[in-house]
Each structure stands twice: as C-alpha cells, then as structure tokens.
Amino acid sequence: MSYGPIYNPPVPFSTHFHSGVNDGTVVVVAGSIPHSADRFSVNFQCGHGDNDDIAFHFNPRFDEKLVVCNTMEHKNWGKEERKKELPFHHGQQFEIRILVTSCDYKVSVNRNHFVEYHHRLPLHRVNTLTVKGSVCLTSVETQAQGCGFPQPPFPGGHMQNPAYPPQMFPGAGCNPPPFNPGQCPPASYAIPFQTKIHGGLFPSKVIVIRGAVAAHHPQRFHINLNFCGGIAFHFNPRFKENTIVRNSKLNNSWGTEERQLPCGGLCFTPGQSFVIEIVCEHHHFRVNVNGSHVCNFNHRVSNLQQIDSLQVEGDVVLHHVQI
Image (cartoon, rainbow, N blue to C red; front, side, top):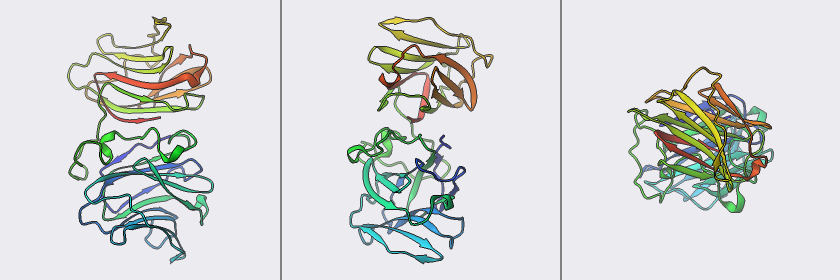
C-alpha cells in the first residue's frame, strides 16, 4: 500500500516507516535545490535520534560536485562510496526514487538510474526516514512492496510510471513553484489524463488515484482501464443520477451496466478530495473509495495482461496516480 504523499514538509524532515522496510519498499522524495545549497542528505535510519545508526546515507554535495553514500554504526562512519557525478542543479526541481531490494538500495534521480548501495546493516533495523540539509521538499512518499513500478524496476536505466505529474521534473516546461511549507497546493495532472500500464494487470495489482471532485456543479467523471479491443472496466460516477455506473466496452459495443451500490449511494461530494483504489483480483476488480469498499466488477476480459492503459476524464482535479 501507499501511505500517501506528505506535501511541502519542513526540513529537517523525519517520518516513521509504519510497516518497516522490506524488499520492494519504494521511497519517493521530490523537491527543489536552493541557489545557495551546499549539501543535503536522505537517510534510512535505525532510530529517531541524531546518534542512531544510519543504514543508508545518500548525500549530494554541491561544494564537491559528487554524491557520497555511507553507513554510520555505533556513531562511526564506514567507508565512503563516492560517485563523482551530481545529477542535481541549483534552482531546479528533482525526484529521487529509492527502491529497497534484498541486496541493496537502488537510487534513481529524475527517472534515470543513478547508483546502487549494498546493505551493510540488516533491513529489519531500519525504521525511520530523514531528510536534512540545504533542500526544499515538495513531497515525500513511502510505497510498500508492489506499489512502485513494474519489474525490472530500472529497465534500461529509465523509470516507468512516475508517481508525480511531469511538472515536478526539471525541463518539464515550467518554472519551479515557490517553496511555501504547508501552503502550496499539490501539483495536478491535466485532464483528460492517460498513462500506460506497463506489463498489464494481474491479481494483487493495485492502482491508486488521488484527486478531488470539481467544486462547482460536477456532472460526472470516469476512469477507464483500456486494452486494444476496448474498455475492460469503466468506472463512472454520475452526480445527477446519484450512482456509479460500471461497464465494459468490447468490440465497439457497451455491455450491461451495473448500477447497484452495496455502499448505498454515491460516495463522492463536490469539492471534496478522494482516494480511489482499484484492486485487480482473480475474478473481479474491487474498488475502494477513501478506504471503504464500494463495489466489485467481474472481469469481462480474460487476459488481464492485455489491459495496458489508464484514462481519467471528467469533472475532477487529479493529484496523484500510482500504478
């Protein structure tokens, strides 16, 4: 599962890993580099204090134009691993994505694989993430096993399915927003929105969509799981009809609509935020909204792996998509 992004946290920043750190855990740190920055660090710690062991210390240094990785145990630093390359730039935004495996930490910066760091301390001891130094944070998110990106995690050195809108990356055609802790609204995707589902769907796959219903007179919106032959699953809240229509479109023809809601009514409200989880199970899609089960939709497409794209359209603001 994902614990959701923490937007615009102050630095120094610290958060607890609620379910620990395991093979498959992903941490995503997005932010920008102040013009006066000299160095900052992202740390996987074995405790909350400044003197507690640090299993993985990721430390970009602008004064030396390199990145240092290291481990601190019993207040002593180990042997530094230095990469004489700095993928961060003053005044620009960045995204760091760290995938934890059974062997190492794999770090990607701005969707490009950057470095690997082999474990020196056991994963079960790691319980805290900290970010310190000269950096402005836009968001920090922890994703549990299976919620990061499809395997292999860094095909060809490039990351797939970034969990943040393209505005968050350098060179995306917009200026970095001013850093205003606790006041800046989350970035949003353009609507209509569409993205690929690399590798298709399979049982246990979870899609998470975070957003908000339009505040003024929303009519409807929909989420489609598409494949080359049509729409495998159409999830369509309709406000005037006070229901959610579920359907599929195969061979250019819509199937039988499903409208009955076990939850008793429309679970979306104009102007309010939502979290939709679409869980692919063996026989159906299970849909949860804000943590509550809303409906199931039996599969009408037998080959789940051919479902290769997600579409969102209608009267919504879209903040975050996780595939």
